[in-house]
Image (cartoon, rainbow, N blue to C red; front, side, top):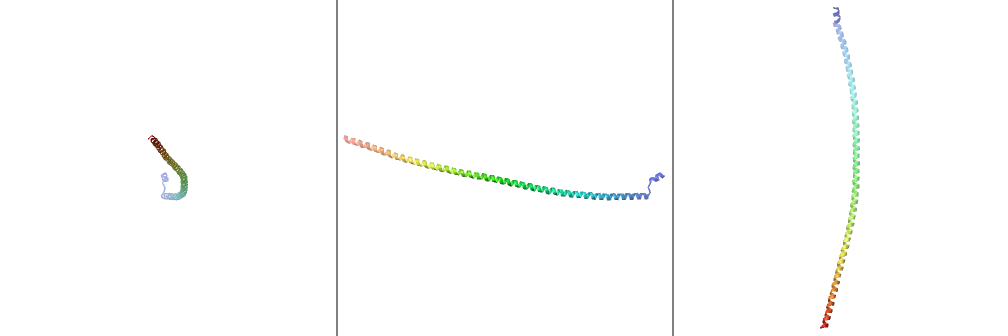
Length: 160
């Protein structure tokens, strides 16, 4: 009985053990709450740090994006101005060549007109010369015919 009795606990001892266990549980609960709060505070501070880092990265990304856009716009404007300059230069060369072409074309037309006039004048003078030679030939022919007729009439009168 003593052995069984030793293993058994009285109600008062049970109450004391229960109170000790409850006190120990309360202290564990307090520790857990404190630990939860400190972990929550740590998580909150880490979250805040991450938010600030994220904002910094976002701002840096926006700045880089703006910088890249500005560089791209600058490059595009530079290329556009370069192309416009090249186009203007080509247009100027084209205008010079066109004016030179028109000038040479006008010179050629002028010389062609002058040559045509000279040819026309030469043809007209040759026609005039031909007509005058025809008239002279007709005069000589008429003179020859009249001379022959006069000689023939003279010979006819002498015979008669």
